[in-house]
Image (cartoon, rainbow, N blue to C red; front, side):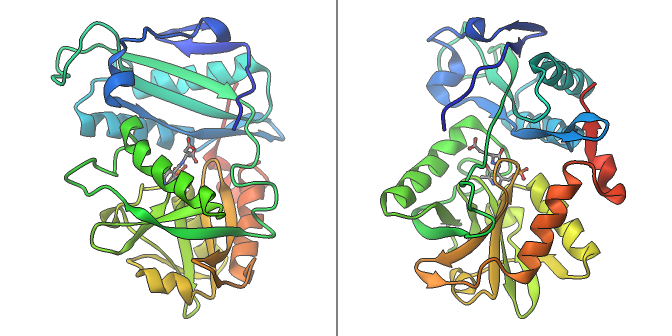
Length: 305
Ligand code: PPE
């Protein structure tokens, strides 16, 4: 999806002009995928732009770095403030936010211990990740021929830049085959997640989403959806799913910061009623929650200024 430029990008402690936010071609992260990143959204609320669950996203960035053994030279609070400062500098009321910490220029080779860590935060307006019709018409999923990483190869628990080659292989395969998104299975055949979203299905009236142990990212939207679903009175759990659970699901949806809540209309050409009643109720509540319209979830909306 094309990027629309904004004014400034935060790089290593200062806001620089968008066009000047550049790195050297020998940057370590470019060669070895040695970076960690986040995807966050800011939404317009009655009190001004607010960043949805910003603190948890920045904490996850630090956890990803910890898994990689990467020392981010800032504190969680500093990157929270920097994210707010970057959003405020754009003047936008709604945008996508991309913090990234990566091994920088100066060292080559696979021993990352001497490498410096650079940090940048960019924001830009980003529309519906899976298309404007994703909530109402739903998306077509295809089980990928690519397997999600094992925990002892590329830990899926860390949102590492290099991990996303696996996601891109799956996404491109699905699109070329005429589908919208790929479902990825773990090496043991259980459902992990989609290329850039967590997945939920309803079976016997209960909503189920796969765990981290099955190779899913611990999604912040997944966590919001679990809370919302339970508050709406639905039974919702984190549990393993077989591929065939998707084929006979009563309803299904995917969720993530970029995709928000998007319903699924089929998996491997097995149709699923769409949008299902629980999906519709959750999507509607989520869309109000992110804009600060529901009191009990307002603490998720962290004002940008
Ligand atoms: N799984 C994966 C693999 C994933 O990339 C995301 C986010 C999620 C689950 C959902 O996580 P959360 O955003 O915390 O609910 N995917 C990001 C988009 C990736 C991309 O750059 O494209 C996102 O939604 O920001």
